[in-house]
Image (cartoon, rainbow, N blue to C red):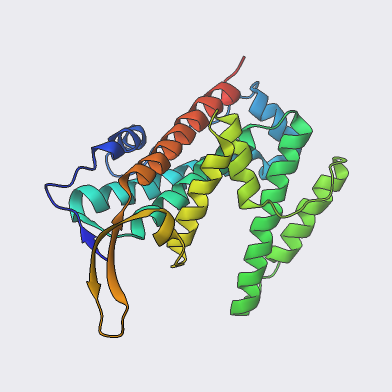
Amino acid sequence: MNAPATEQEDFSYLAPLFKAAVAYRGDDHFLLLPDVAEQSSLAKDDEPLGTRGAAKFVQSSFSAGLMHVEAFAQLVTVAQRVDLHSPWTLLRGALENFATAAWLLAGKNPDERRHRVLSLWAEDFRNRAQHERDTNYVPRPGGKSGAERREEVKQLARNLGLPSLTKPETTTIIYEAAASAGLDSTATQALWRVASGFAHGRFWPNLRATKVRSAMPLSNGGALVDFVLDDYQLAEMAEACRELLEHTASRYKARSSAR
């Protein structure tokens, strides 16, 4: 059910997340994470990867997360129309984005970090190839398809002696990223599951992450139930996003700066 935001509703618990994101907003755009210094640990990780390094992926994921948060902020503060699904859907996107960036910056050694980013590049090109197949896209002369680019990434992994590339599972990324940021991995994963349920229009999140505002008996013996957001759980999701945002920014600064 739609629950319009009114002046009486208190969404102040979202302020820390919105404030963390707005720090990266320029006049009419979001600021990118800075370039990587040549002698930084991130540059050394990326050196044998060429254009398939982690820095570009981290910057892209982080920026996407900021845009999801910005859209949510506009929904709350400007549109003032907060329904059951949109907040969870937007924060789900932000959580996945920040977690992906944090996951790429973690890893116990360069080989593991290189394997992580090449796995994501391979999946990116696999998805591109699927779209090309669906749209009957043919590369320009001299160009390469998503499938061909994916094979290049897999060959690069073999040349570096890395394990076979497999599709990175979102649950794994979130679980491990949460741990790297000092969050409760299982609890963060549970929040993501609720958010995904709302995003896909499933029924079960209504039983686990909403509050009943009213119920109207129906003639068939059932009832029409009016659900509203569970502010406590949404606050936990927003806080997880904020912590992953700030953790990613801190780790990127540390790993992209010259020593």
